[in-house]
Structures are given as structure tokens and as C-alpha cells.
Image 1: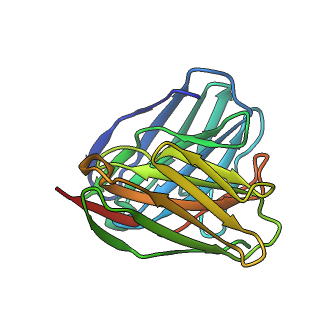
Image 2: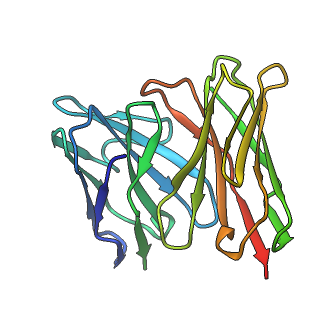
Image 3: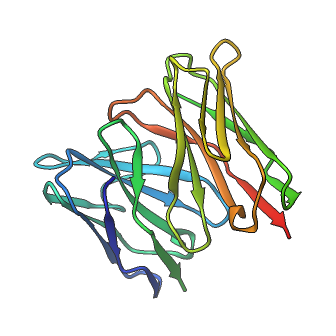
Length: 113
Length: 112
């Protein structure tokens, strides 16, 4: 199984500002996934990040709001831009194992005030 | 796209009793069905999964069953313990880096 480290684990941010979340994996992976989990809700896929190409966004999510970087096979960042209170959520990084199972980081709990 | 429904949303059981969580999916092409446990303040952790060529899988106190004809799958936890208290998510996928669709989650409380 993959070990995934996310930073920061939590943050409180002012509306209108941006926060960049980092995800580090202990092994090289082809794809990395970013999810949002709103309070008391399930996980919703934001985008899929491949190394060397632009991320692929799911319906309802756009690059201007959630820019993603994938500079190498073990690292990715997700930025939440121009934040509003509605962006308060847990953001999760995920990678896929050899048998298609998904492994998650511990998440970043974001509160926008 | 795939739609996964999960119930119940909350479940309370006495310690030692069994707990059952049920999910249905809509895309008959889905062939991979993982279950995740999420404890407070942590990311989801894979606890068991099943693929479409298998009807049942067991790992100690946890078992999962799959009925492809009816497009539903279930998680069974026997001899529940307080540390089983968490939110459980079912999910469905086409496998192989395809999108994973999650159910809404079941908050399980095991009462000592």
C-alpha cells in the first residue's frame, strides 16, 4: 500500500485568499486524485492529475478555482483559489494501487471565515 | 455516470451484535467495489473490496457480498466492537484508474 502525506492537515483562512495543499507519495504513481468531502457528506472527485499534462476536472470544478500541479510522479498540489465559506471542506489526495484500490491521505481540513 | 446509493445513513448496534450496510449501483459495467472506513479526523481507509467475478469475500470479522444481477453489494461486520465505530463508505468503479463513485456513507455507532 502507498503512504500518502498531506500538508497542511488543517487551516483556517480568510475569504478571498488562496490555499495550496501538498500531497507527497512514498512511491511513483501514474495518477493522483483530488477529492472534496463537505461536512457530513461523501467524497466528490475534483480532478485527476497526470504527470506532464493538465489535470482533468470533473463536472462542476474548474481549473481557475482549483489549479493543480503535478511536477513529478510522487508529488502534487491543489490550490483552492479566492476562497469563500462554501469552500470549507476536507480535501483529500488519493492514489491508486496495483489492484485498482484507492489509498487516501489523512486529508486537509479547511475552514474559510 | 455511475450512481451509488447507500443505507442506512446511521446505524447503532450493541457491542457483539452484527452490522449490515447495503449499497446499490447503477452502471452494470462497474466491476470493482471497495469499502472504506473513516475515523474522525482521518482519511478513508480501505478495509475490504470485491470484484465482479466473486460473490463473497471474508476477512476475519468483515465480509462483503455482491449480487451483480441485482446490482447491490453489502458489508457485514460480525461481533462488533467499540473501535468499529466510524463512517463507512461503499464505492463502485470500472477499475483500472477509472473514476471511483462513493456512497453517502453510514455512521456506525457500537454501543459498549
